[in-house]
Length: 189
Length: 216
Image (cartoon, rainbow over all chains, first blue to last red; front, side, top):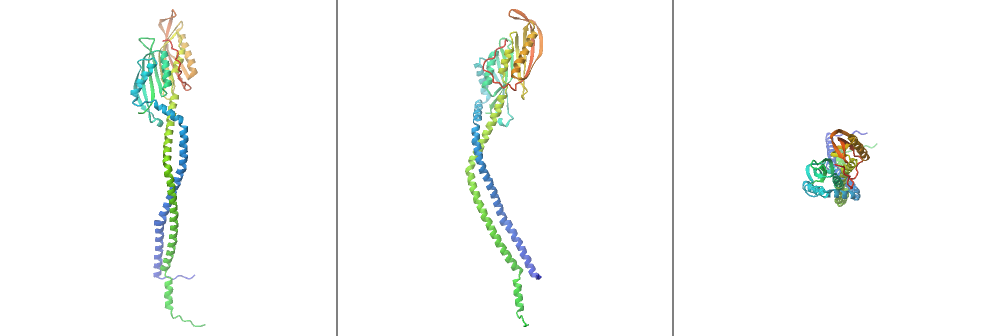
């Protein structure tokens, strides 16, 4: 092989050419091809993402339609349960309601007193509150009370009696005095 | 062999030097490479533009579908919340203790020679059952036996509808006073019964018919 004899001037020019070549490569990849590839890659990611979303959206809408059909009973039931909480503060309508209810059951002078209210811890019941009431029935007889409690438990699904106290009336042993501690679940208003 | 004299030696030498100029060769190589790289860049740019047009088409599709999807998702979330709430509320409704059937059973157990003076019942939290304190009076030749009869009857009646039924005397004491039943004087005893049970299988609907009243 023939030995390449380069002069000092030629070596300098060769070195300059090499530097120029490196600079060209750097500029090309950093300022031209690199951004273009990045832009292309990000667009491909967006396309995949959107294609996936469009694909899953069809399932999503189908699921919602099916859920709508399946949830018919639950929706009706939920509406009925919501309707059991009339508009307004419970303390305004619940005591008169109980008074009327027991009056219809031939138990007069029934009173209801609010003892407190607490929110539920369950996330599903974030819109609902538990109200604790003390129902006082100063004079009733056992048979009438039994009928009234049966009616109350059957017509008020969101009401539960957690303490019941029946004791003979001191004045008239034929009658009993009754205290009921009840909890009601009501919609927050 | 003929003698060959090169009289233009220096000129040839200079021409050769010019042809071998590394800077010139390097510039040519750089130019060639630059052209290749430019072509490659253009090819990539073309592909990128093609991808951009595809992205625009997909974005257009998505913009048409998105409002429907969002409303579907919102409705699904709403329905799931309704289903969850209804489920929890139904669980509460089914899990509550119905006092009316209990009072009916109790009234069936109280015989003519017994009288209840107080009933105090509590539904314990966390599904731990129900406790009831019953106080009353029993009369008869053997008033304690009458009270025991009531206890046995309660145990039997409540055992039919509830679980882990316990009926125990807290107190049972004779009284000095006499009761007149059917024209005959009978001895009396005062009792206090503690009743405890678990209504796990007792999600019985309260019956509409009235319970039979015990003698008070």
